[in-house]
Image (cartoon, rainbow, N blue to C red; front, side, top):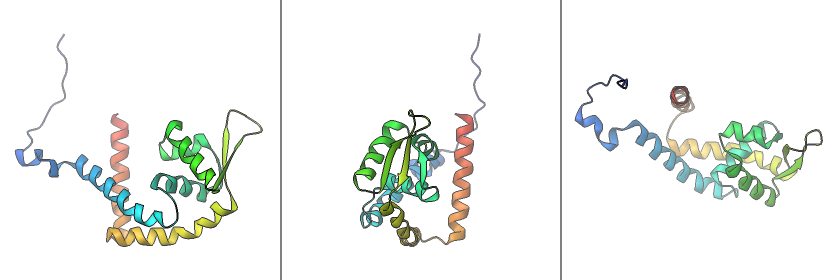
Length: 155
């Protein structure tokens, strides 16, 4: 039996160069974002992944670890050390759910809640670093979300 292959299109040689690859543009931009955030977040004592966890918790101040992992697309092996560090820094607490002891509930401490006031400074700083308006950022974000959705659907 012959294997079926997807129909391929003829790609011009110039499009095969590294700098023309969409995947490399996304990859290198992600690294640039991480570097830009580092200097901003160092001032408030967070790493970029910790900041993402805090963003989730600033929306809802108490969530199961599983829910945080799902929202950030992080597995427990990656998320647990982040949460441990945030707890060590006094920003969150982790407690077993009284109704289901298999679940761990993450809650903001008063210090973690107070840190929410930094979000405007952080977002303004990264906005300045991108050189984009809020409308431009929304357009880019929507395109990236559509791209992620397409890629997820085909995976």
